[in-house]
Length: 559
Image (cartoon, rainbow, N blue to C red; front, side, top):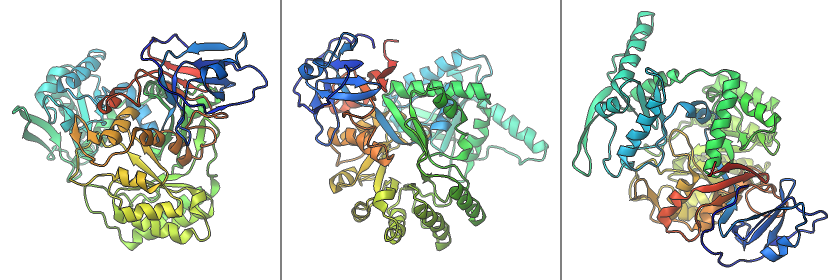
């Protein structure tokens, strides 16, 4: 670990615990402001680590007394330390397969800077190679000039490279080269028997920014499915990767996650996102720098596929993982047609719920955890009906089923979920405009209910990947660039608990992860400023100085 620069002086501390150690610790970190995120949210000065686990937490004097000549001692010089951040809902394999080819503009609030990021990416490529921005942003986030990208400005940013920009799953922007290539590709397919594409859903749109700047952009509306069709076509240009290259992509993506303070993720994606072979390879070689857990991959789009899914579920074992990698449960779409949205009323017929319930019953009987997408309260309420019926024979407090997203969940549903022993997963919406005058999700109601809830990103397409953006969102109530979205926010303590200790509980890892307590793995993040005292709008700007997993530095801002 490198020496840290001195910043603010240490404030107050409270002793958490000192373990009786038979041998001196390997490492001691002292003179810090350590937010343990234990049940009392204790603050300590020092930590001792042996064999990757925490063996003491307390005052400088008490912990340093455990040192011997072979103990490495590192002065934190007043820096704040938090537990490694856990993301309870990420499309990890999808993000890893694409990140190398992207110009990410997550949380960038300057249009000029966003275009420069795209331009710099293009300059590092050969002419003709594609530049992608595959989500994590929205048109309203640019404070200097809101709105979609114009063909002309994208042409200027990358005159020799096709540029394709995806905004969630609803719109796409591209420069002339990208449009020409996509049109030619589709026409070639048409001549070979495919469907003709005339980009009828790609249209010129005009809007007036707050600065009065007229913007004419080439975008694709998602109302008729045009955006998804074009997005699917464009992403076929993401280069195919060999098995060894896929391992390299995982290493790169993990380094990005580490740079944001992430040490554990739960991938709730689909089989189309790619298999976990490269992650397994790194796990077997003890070279993972992020703990990667995932849901069971299967297809269930109709009753016939449900039959196949049930056979697959029966042959699999829930929560078959170690401390680094493996399977946890089912989700986020137990039955794929059950896929609601906060942007429209979604009412599903009994035929859809019947197939969902078939899998849910099978899952409960087999001891499976379910992590289910439910943005509308009508969806959450029906899931709760099923959970209540199953709870008579299969206790939900043991299965810990999770209702995910919860954008429009009601107070009644929150309390029903708590009573059953379910958990809630809330996901970052900073890359989405505020919906209306209703808090979405009702984060304060969720916190005040006492239910166990956790924070996740839902990255990389529909949201930013940075967990400090999520922490800023629920404590400030704002979305980018600085617009109020949630009136009733939660405390910094509650938010950090949701991104650490509570998420460990959601993943059945509460005995090993989520807080800085004796016996747990030494997954830590040393911050460049004090999370508890900086102005709330600076939370989104916090940067890790170092990220530590199992007592080993996996990210150092100086390197």
